[in-house]
Length: 296
Length: 276
Ligand SMILES: Nc1ncnc2c1ncn2[C@@H]1O[C@H](COP(=O)(O)OP(=O)(O)OP(=O)(O)O)[C@@H](O)[C@H]1O
Ligand SMILES: [Mg+2]
Image (cartoon, rainbow over all chains, first blue to last red):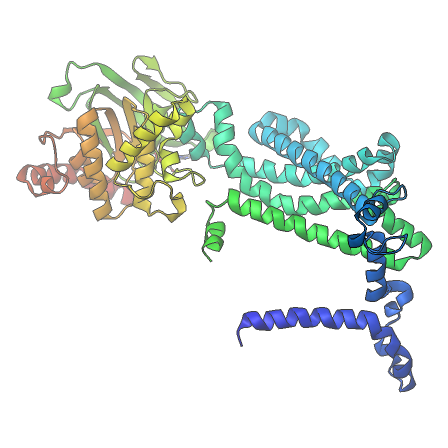
């Protein structure tokens, strides 16, 4: 049997085992307890804490407006589906959209400002020395501790979530761009100058492409940080979003709701990272490890 | 002793002065750890001269070239290119430079590397592509236009660097051991390509090398430097007729004679380097 099929069987087997334990594990507690093996089933498997896959699936259908509140299925009743998605109290999809939108803006603004400032300070020794103590000081502050302040400053709406995300994203991207810019090969810069490039053209045609590998290395963590920022912002105070579903589910002990939100978050995280890997492969195809992967 | 400002080749006498180097010195470092690298070097280059700077490793060849190019400041003396004093950090548009190290842009294809300078200058795409295609043909790189440098051999990459400089039609070309990292066979191929090009365009060239046969094959004149700190030891004229054939030239008696003569002088410097 090839290694690939072993890996596939292992992966699916593990998934089946985890789902089965989740669904039925707790039911084994009592019979196992009679023969003194109750400790094999830990208390955290109690559906009171972790719910059950079937319950979560049902809640997913309801929160996702697939099973409509007025009865029937979404695919038989498109109008009812839309009404439910955009209902005033919100649905899984409207909350997801809010979280995604804030993540997107936080990521976009954080990455662009991180790249811009990284390039600027990477190109100017003087500016780098002026800003260094402030950057170090601000970066050593756990950004999450700023969230209450950010919410006071920018309100419970979307802006405070975007700001939280971007303070997290900015620094990762900034440090990578800065390092990437500083480690540019001096001879490449000189070669470009001899071919007539101005300072500005050298920046665009030598510094940016050389630093690009470093910038990309920071984008996967940046995506995670953007999501973290938005969710934490939503925990502390918000009108909508997946973080709000989670925090409300905690208050009401609706574990199934919480699990639905967590699984959606996981899917979003994976999807975003995959998209960035694809973009990276395209833009950095001149690099050795990307070129080799492309040949496989 | 230094042959002050002499011009090795008779033919170029009377042509315009392109490069004047007077008592050029360079000391690296400051305070106690001073490293004298170049010591009072003087020479003149006239329009269309091909000069080889020859000397043992570490004698200051790259340092001299970098000072002429304005890449590093000099510590003493005077350099003029076309009558203008060279200032470190300011690039002269008539000067092209080919580095000792491989400096192709890894993120650009062969064609876009060669076309880089024209792109920077804003030459229209159609003209640019035509000129790039001509260079690619001369460099025998046909079929590799869209390849990224990581898929090329060392010799191919160095041809890309060379063509990238030459496409700008520099009147003065500074080359720092551009073929130093190549095997003998590839080197000869590069010599032939460079000879063909130079015999057509007749740029003013300073070519740094520690390889005597390379200097004899390409240059009109060889400036021999002493072991560190670099001083001019001798200035040889290389009067072989042109056009030259890189391979056949080496079989001639004249080549053998001049080789022996310069070799003797160079050998003393190799010995001095070893003794250090
Ligand atoms: N940036 C520097 N700082 C201190 N010393 C230097 C520096 N650059 C070169 N040197 C010294 O100056 C001397 C001449 O160096 P240079 O690079 O010009 O030699 P070269 O003749 O080009 O040698 P090679 O043939 O090996 O390239 C060497 O002894 C070197 O140690
Ligand atoms: Mg050198």
